[in-house]
Length: 64
Image (cartoon, rainbow, N blue to C red):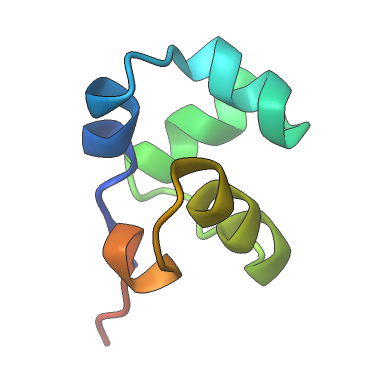
């Protein structure tokens, strides 16, 4: 799954560590999502979108 998590983090001046703490995951999880090595759960995707006040589709794009 493609994502723009790093872009949204940069726009809001949030570090991986800060973001991880806010959504209660590890920094390594945020890093893996950004590198597209890990797809977040639906619950985590909702938390991230809610945190940035956007729709899930604004951050994540499904590709087969």
